[in-house]
Length: 110
Length: 118
Image 1 (cartoon, rainbow over the protein chains, first blue to last red):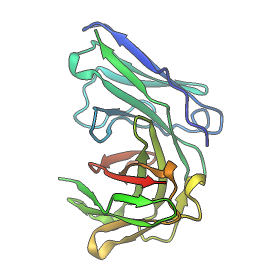
Image 2 (cartoon, rainbow over the protein chains, first blue to last red):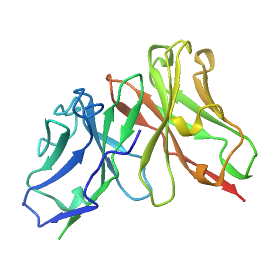
Image 3 (cartoon, chains in turn orange, green):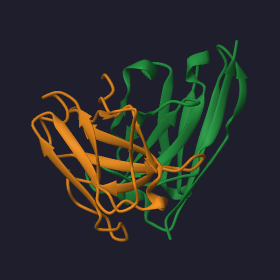
Image 4 (tube, rainbow over the protein chains, first blue to last red):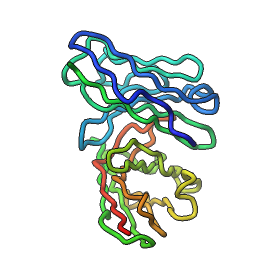
């Protein structure tokens, strides 16, 4: 049950696009389409942004999108806005009712 | 409106016990799996445990197996996490989360801090 690997930080200017990778194995990310992404502001609870690899819950802006290729999932934020600055975590089902989160990525808006 | 409110956290010595509670409202608790997720200070999220709608199935991360027990009381709209043999490395903010859409934690409580001292 090792954590999924994410870059420690990514940054971009307002209006640009940034992508966050989430690398696992064939036993988690690569084996199931149950990858979700969470946004967390400092001192706050996480908020669901993407589920089932690429689906957005109601209320999440469409500038957030998800994808997956092999053992790596990705979250893309298009048209970056100041309010998108936060920590982001991926999460994957890993079989047998087990879940594993990513190491987390800090997104900075320059 | 879905609300999850944790309570029961605090400071405990290594080897001690603590019981966390999660009060759920705004949705029929009996229809949902529920989860606990924790976050050590300055660290990432870690899934801790899941419990089925009727409490008949429970699953844990390896590091807490045999020490933590998740339970629920649907009549009282509550989910619990009994933590025994606590270790310094269990120090974290513990979040109660609804396991809604399959494979997803769709609503979260505000979190409760558990500090284990040596």
